[in-house]
Length: 163
View 1 (cartoon, rainbow, N blue to C red):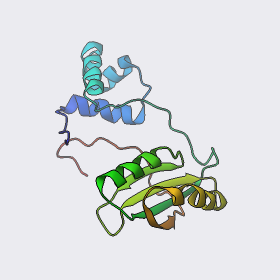
View 2: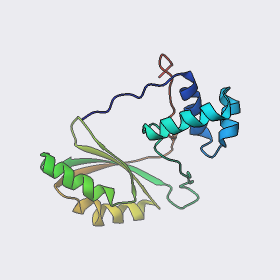
View 3: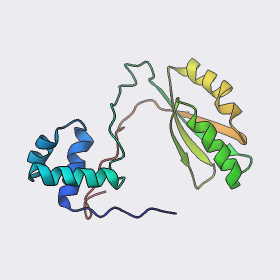
């Protein structure tokens, strides 16, 4: 079942714009920035949280400073794409912290993984010991990123705004 878009007005979009950059902002400061008083801002924020638009708050870490500067994108082809096989693959991938993103793809392969490791040697080991043991794996192709030109969290776009 697909969830529908959440109904938001310009104040809700302003809240999201601010939170996307400053997730730890106080409600008082958030209210000042969007041009509402504290109580309606707090109510709107709670509604966005309860509605699942704001799914949580977390710290963002610099992967380079953590020694995880090697990024590889891995095309995965499965031997079986029935629902049970996809579920088994999904469950196995969820257990791998090196997999930063996993997307089911409509195309010439089945999944695209974004994998972050400490270097080529670490990636080769991860490929051999973890990726190659994933359920229903038929094959992979790896593409190593040389530079991240743009890498950030989703930015809310107001309806009618540029995409």
